[in-house]
Amino acid sequence: MHKVDVCLSPLLFPLHETPGAAYLMIDAIRASTSITTALDNGAALVRTAATLEEAFAHREQGFLLAGERDSIKVEGFDFGNSPEDFLSDKVAGQRILFSTTNGTRVVKQALDARPKALATACFLNFSAAFRWLEAQNSDLVICCSGWKDNPNIEDTLLAGMLVERLVETGRYEARKASANIARFLHEGRGQQPLFDFLYANSPRVRANIELLREDIYYCMRVDTLALVPVFDFEHLGFVGQQW
Image (cartoon, rainbow, N blue to C red; front, side):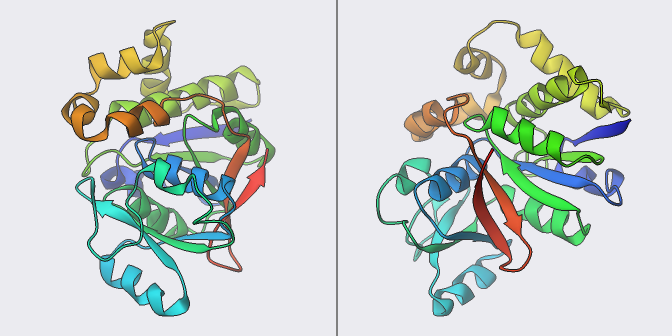
């Protein structure tokens, strides 16, 4: 039986490195959602960079630049980190470089761990991400981006939803407390609407509701896309795959 593990914060990543595992990055509000949306709207490749210096270096390679620091679009970038930035024909056929406060850092951590495979998930592609995870037939590490090294409710909740589905298959077990913490958070939500649950329990959602209201509503849509951003090791970026 394979194990499914959850890393609740980038600071905890060294405790969860697993040889031969497939990794899944979650940054539900907003990087995972924006990357998924860009690829669903025809972007050819989404590459990530942990630093702004690395991001700006991609301009000369013909990449469009997207991302934020502290939720604000980086000056000189073509796009911010709002998923609605990627709903138009501006991204079709384009290569995009993402650099964000949290999520793109986790991508680098996962790549440094030499994963069997790497993908990213959000609420929009929840079931597709589950199918991708199940198809890996290996140990799994779900990496939550959190917020500035702290765990957050939204990423942990989505991880718990995935852990629950995987354990229900009978082929995976949660062997570490962090995976069960995420799972119990999902179970504790019950039938409460997703936005209501997150607004009641996530300090980050409440703190950013005025600045990011429309983005947050968009990110809370569940199972609207069947596309999963999967890392292409030849082209060093995410490409869209239908699952």
